[in-house]
Length: 152
Image 1 (cartoon, rainbow, N blue to C red):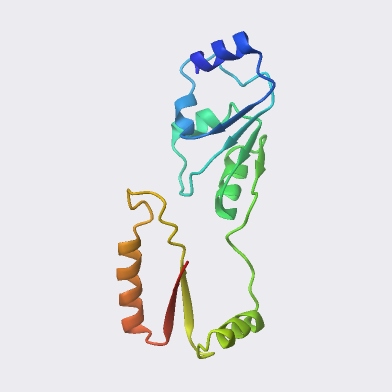
Image 2 (cartoon, helix red, strand yellow):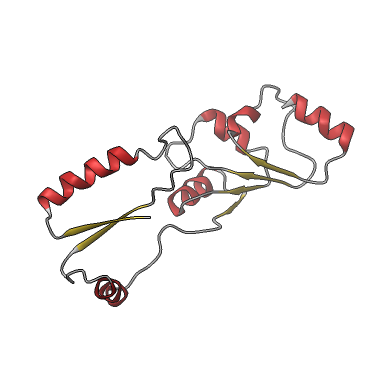
């Protein structure tokens, strides 16, 4: 934090956009209250509860961008004085009519269940645990044989 503030005073930032592990900004010095320029943090955490270090660090930013409606609710509750933004929503509403049209397009029985796995495998660390997701679907499919798996 102190290093960033020194850079800011030398370079005169007009705004700060941070993407990464926010805990690196946890307040070690009580005088660290916030940035004096507009600041935005892309907060990629998607689980609750938020760690105390993250909470301290998020207090420094004007705007927090999060990934999911449930995290937006958590942040709004935890930090009511901050602007919380949800740029996309993973909770896309789909009517049963839309679901039926999609099933008809792919020749899937209307009574079936469709499961989608987003398997964007750009990293080599198996962060999305595709193997675990496939094993979980296998067990689900054994119990519900009219289930179909889509991998994107």
